[in-house]
Amino acid sequence: MRWTLALPAIALAVTPAAAALKQGAKAPQIATTGAIGGKPFKLDLQAQLKKGPVVLYFFPKAFTKGCTLEAHAFSESADDFKKAGAQVIGMSSDKLDTLKKFSTEECRSAFPVATATPAVQKAYDVAWAEHPGLTTRTSYVIAKDGRIVMVHDDLDWSQHVAKTMAAVKALKR
Image 1 (tube, rainbow, N blue to C red):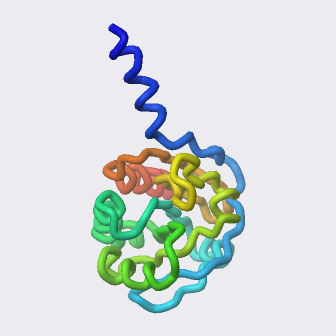
Image 2 (image 1 turned 180 degrees about the horizontal axis):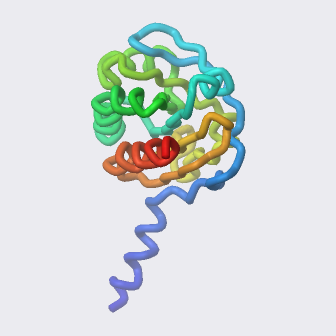
Image 3 (image 1 turned 90 degrees about the vertical axis):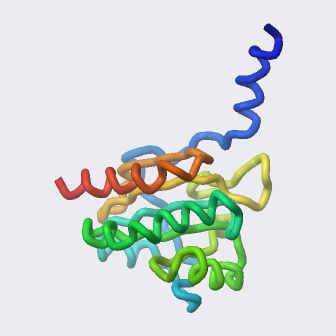
């Protein structure tokens, strides 16, 4: 009986806190560097939103199992996101050299990945308290007007692509 009471506490200890940015909130501006296809990329969120909705997904650490699987899933769906009028941008606290390699090997040059600076992590509430220096696994869909239309905050990578795609398709209706 005592063991079953401890399980919820254990689950809470390994799960990141829910994202503070809620649906309807204005997405904070981001200006940082990253890579696409191994080449430097300057991320200016305001400029990206002029092109259409943005799927901004934060991942904890490049080249870890879950983050690699998530990058593969987003790269396999990149054309579908483009057809729906949205662009995908991955973000982590990794250094630029790591992201250059990750952008070609795991993102398959399908979308950019950028450095989530401490200021960006704070603005998007994705700094992982239990693992300082890493971000939580949180996906935001941001409409062209800069409003957040969907938030998915879950360490399990497997539903991030499907949930963000559903939100992007809902924007088109």
